[in-house]
Image 1 (cartoon, rainbow, N blue to C red):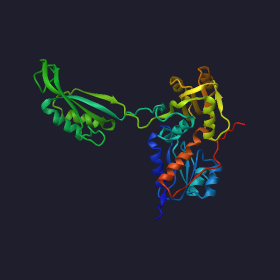
Image 2 (tube, helix red, strand yellow):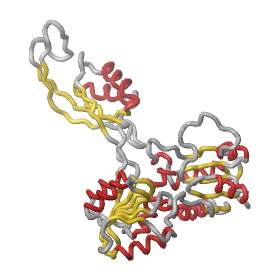
Image 3 (cartoon, rainbow, N blue to C red):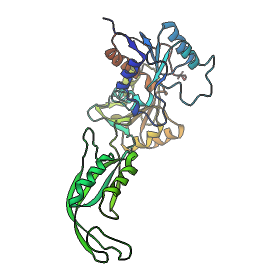
Image 4 (cartoon, rainbow, N blue to C red):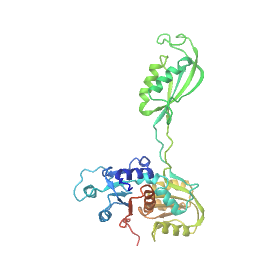
Length: 370
């Protein structure tokens, strides 16, 4: 029985390879154009969706294009005849872009480039860790022991205490609290105003989603027996879901730079690259950053690597690297990214075996080294 694939099934397969939630906040990834229910039999993979590549897609009769760089990046004021987006929609060709989601994903752009350099997979880490997100806080409050269940039940009902697939999660420890109420303005639930009291209390801690913080605090005030409940809201940072961008680590074995360079050129399919810094050296530790990742130079220097391979780097940053004794290899922007297309093709072939997958033959970096 023949399996029918759709734009939606292609999107789901790409989501498994490069989860869109991994993308940088400024990026535009995922399905950019097309009907998820449309049937597809053939897909073209490229780095940049140029006119040449689009004409190739039409000649191949594909129904979808996976373009690593998003051809729809900033909001469009108009979509008119002659634009690639217009032509893709008119020809019913869907467009999907993974970009920085693929950069961050395991086995994605930066891991492929790290493999080309010979960085060991066993000690490989991110060069630029992803920013932690603030999605939750912790509510810490102090409750009379006989009221702890009532207060906790109110917090749970308002949405507190959810950890993964578990609900009604709390931590409680018994202790003693002291307070002295103003005789003119307080009517304490325990003891008397104007007299320092010592009460048996339970410290309660629960996780609070930031979106429900106000409602949960209101529930605390409503359920707590004290006139003025004591509580803290503690900021929490979520553990990052992915490694981050770029990769750094030791080579599988110390290797002379010339040998590393030869293997890199062969893996990327190029005969020339740009090099700054010392070349007569043995490389023990290296870093990579696919594309325009000169912003990671400081991280590479801090990691004390011998070699930094990336797509492009500004002139003064190349001088900075060389003066610090770091060898830098610039492959050109999309050259550092293109090798990953073969890996995406292989993984899609395993996920959607009856789909015809083509690597673009007209996709190339706009710059050449003559």
